[in-house]
Length: 142
Image (cartoon, rainbow, N blue to C red):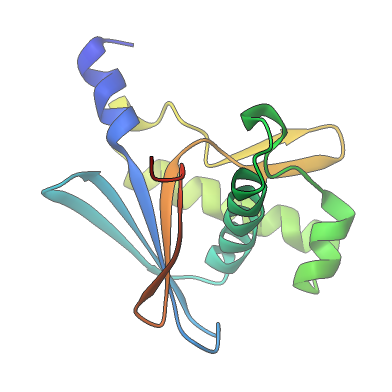
């Protein structure tokens, strides 16, 4: 990856906009302060939001970055009220939407990471806003 492409990938930031009742989740991608891509409202954004919240909670507890956010796929399925195959479809749709929206040079970062039986939100920076109030940011502000 060229240095310019690396800096664009590092600048990528997701912004979750969540309604107070959590019925609606909109997602935006900020590539730079003046470049933003709106991904709209999709059902799979709630699954991403749940993974992002798990990663954020672990970061706030001070867990090492390599341990943050990992959750058993079966546990996540239960949390979301989905069967495992439906969860996999949602993750596939999220990855596909993300890949389609991002310019090729900024696709280096994975939105979702997997290891045997577990899943987590990737290393992308994000902000969660619920009902107009910032719920949290990852990585944590210095």
